[in-house]
Image (cartoon, rainbow, N blue to C red; front, side):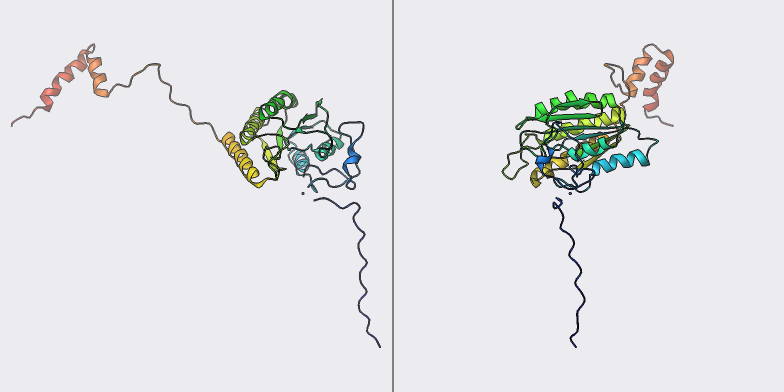
Length: 287
């Protein structure tokens, strides 16, 4: 008779819609939705019907925040997340707000205009645990740093976290685009300044506890320079301060020992006597 082969396994059902591959746009549950789903009455609506957006399957910074709160509860009771990726971290915001607690602060500075991905965080929001600062196309470094100082720094100071997490994207750099036309016009020095500000906040409130997680950055040349500047500044900020110099009286001169003895001899008869013996002691003598 005719030999029958093994039956073919059934084909898995297709993903609907297909997942988009890897961080901060990952939301809590559900399937991926298109940008039109995001547009609702609220500037950052809580939508729970998608799985991965952008390049995000796992939200690293949200996982890090939850892990710190659960595994290091004695030392970490409040976590602040600063997100300076170019795109609004709608997934991060949605996840931490879905926890229903007030011990995680999310603060984001991001580009915003009509049809700019992911079309959330389009209005300025200043709440005790939520800060969204939308920035227009072409925002220069000085305005970006001014917005950070005006909105993010006071929020962190008021929240007083025990751990500071950075969603550290470099795609707001001026060259972060194939045609070198970045949405926001930051420079390498801007990221150095941002890193110094974040480190200062960590020292002020967290005992220096700061964790930086790489996010966006798609021009490899710009990414290399920005990441290097960021790490160098982190190392610089973490280095112990140099030991203090020995205190010295203002205008004090360093006088050689023999000259000091000569000066003291003017008022000290005993020293004057021994100095008078030196020529005799140094002269040659015959037996």
